[in-house]
Length: 156
Image 1 (cartoon, rainbow, N blue to C red):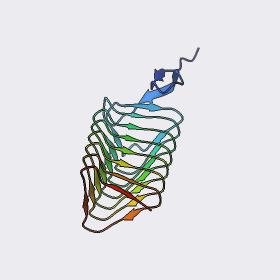
Image 2 (cartoon, one colour):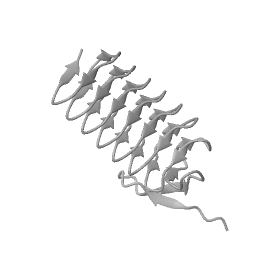
Image 3 (cartoon, one colour):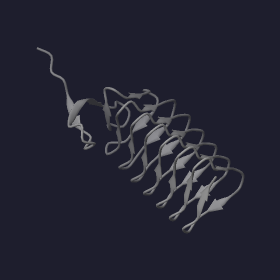
Image 4 (cartoon, helix red, strand yellow):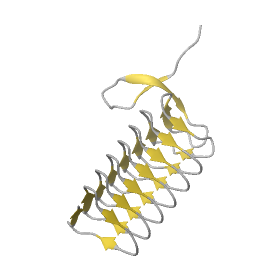
């Protein structure tokens, strides 16, 4: 008799087949993919059909789900959530209580933190820092050496 391990990611789907990632011990749904070279910390979770590739790290209480894609040396940590079709790559960091979702792209050396939100089809790359309550959304594209903070709204 084969026993299937399940875990409830508290996403409304109840317990689903899952396993602990060998590099870090965090929960990964069997429907998601996490490379052996990636790291999922003991309190982090990857579920849905999300993919975590290369040397990406999911740390703290971070959650990566939906069809999100995390790659290269990107980090998602703290209480951050990355979901939908969001793509985080390069050396980008998403942390604090930040949210990146829909089809947003965050790459390069970008840092998204605090309660910042990046969503819709927004692209954030280069050395951009987005923090506090700032939102970047719509088809906005932000790049270069830029800081966006406070309660700023950037859209196109």
